[in-house]
Image 1: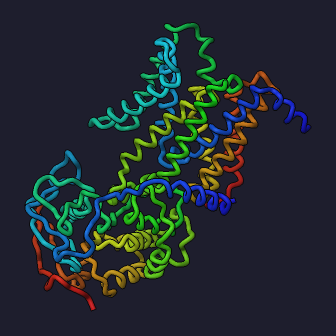
Image 2: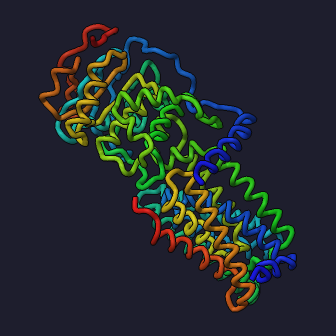
Image 3: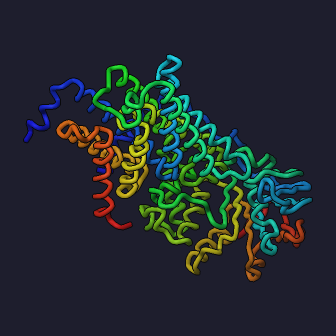
Length: 261
Length: 270
């Protein structure tokens, strides 16, 4: 039954989409990191539109490839800062640039993982399809995503999800879901990973997989991670501390073209 | 036994009703998948109920009742969105306000226009009185809705499942919501002949709710929903043909509820 529907739907889709124009979601971006991944100037923002300012006058730079920890007490504005950089929360004043451009344009090079992702409950979706959503960044309106299978398989393998590809998303554990969302960011080809306390939902096994992925593999993406774990900090290149409504840089990344071995 | 099934097919009105049911089943069940998955059942109820004042004002002013119905449904959607955008009103209560205001306006207009009896078909549906022009309207609407759902499938699915990620990619989740509301308004207008303004929401919710119990992907949910709506629609039509005491609209909705019950009881636990 389901196979018949899938085949029918695919054939119908192929005919339909071959006559439609394809329009990208966001304007075309230049590939590659231009040296500075994130730059802010006197940035201030609020968690809610009409709420109080979460942080103000934040000026900092994060070079490409730098693994950055974002620390500070609860309510210090870590999540708001990450959401601003993802283009999901508007800026109150000042400036924030991601790879030299405004993050609000809709960007394929940014991936953001919320502390508690707001996903529709009981949504009929298999894990593989969730990861495939990452490829949408490279397509756009009126285009089907039939390709990208290799990238999806690779991401699933790297995050230890191969056996779970056909599982419905709502049956996954918190850690498996978190890894699936990271796999989606990988398929998307994101160069900037914004992670809001990603370890909160992870057990030891999941944590090791994510750790290996973020810290040991030598690909040149930039990580900004909100974290509460003081034992963690030695692994980061740079620490941004949020306190009393502003940001203090504790120690900086060395070079622009920073890579891990 | 077979005669019981074939005998009504000799009547042209019955065949027209069957065609209308087939088209509306596809429209409503596919749209309904998103209505149910996005918890828009209440909004869809408001849109379908607001058809009443739309049709009556169209009759009073002398233009097409379909246009009147569509305008009223869109007005309800826009009004609810406008109210909910202000602080202090949740979307839920904004929809509630629009629903009751529009329906009350419909009742008031009904007194103005004529006696209650004339509007029974509008309130409760009369699939057996579907004419050629109605079929054209239903067909065109079904084509628009199904085309829209197919073309925007990946965007609608993404925006419904993970709105934030859609926003991050620039896939316009707010626009997708508007598109869905417009499609639901179109679908309700087309299906009001089948089950009436009061029950049209059942065609959006019951088949799709059955689909959600059985399907594991959005297209599967839609397919099961269409099956359920078809079975219910055809069953209801035969039921009211042989039991004239049962109005066709009520018969269709009751027959749609049977597959839902069966699925509820027998669907594998997930």
